[in-house]
Figure 1 (spheres, rainbow, N blue to C red):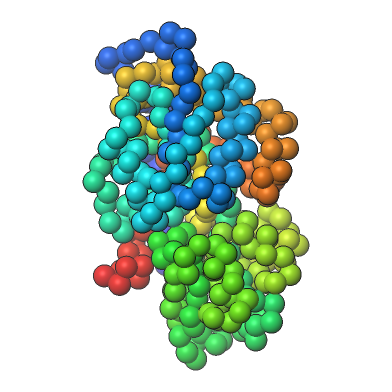
Figure 2 (figure 1 turned 45 degrees about the horizontal axis):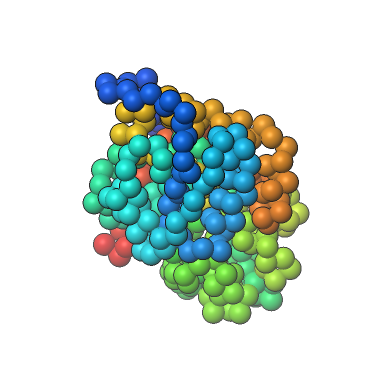
Length: 333
């Protein structure tokens, strides 16, 4: 079988180097003085009370002690995250006093499905908080109890598969599975993690794909059969294997990966502010209080995972490339 995606290392390194160089190339440097001298606003492109909100509050509760200021969230749900990014890029000043806290996987896939009004290189992610791999799971009462059951049935008929939204890393994992096995799948967006779990449990769909943190939270109501990445939690995901291990593919981890982003112009014009943001972000991971706050917010501790500019740039590039490849299947184009 051909590789699922020819993700060039050279392309990744080029993207990463460009992003890393932002703090070095600053033709109009504005010194930080007492930065930050006021609170920092953060656009969250989902609704209040969801997973991103809980993740943000847990992380920022510790980060603020390193940076010396508080963070003020603003919630802009809509269009699978697109609304929040349009507000951030269109209305917020590029002065390093405003950030965006996004879910890199599904939100970057949006740009491959339909380009935004801004250049996707006019912002970059500099601080990854977590990596939550996608997975395939069935309801505990489903007739499809093994991966072999699913593949065999999918070769007889088109299976209806729940997903939280079409342009989602777990959706790409499912489409890749169809490519390598010849099984036929029909993705059905069920709008959000809770509905996607419920769809599999009630039998509304044959099974579902979703990021695994939500599946862990569903407990015994579901059974995980395959991971579109690494199973870092063992029995909590029923010791489900990795797709790459089962089928010999080299699919990048299909992640729900939350990260802080910033205007490129803010990093260009204020490299000292950018440096302070990055160094204090990294220092937050060295504080034991972060893990306590993350677990208290119902986060899976194994998924708390630092990533800097390079890691975020590589993942962003991977999502754009895979999104372009699978665009016809995700949009009906």
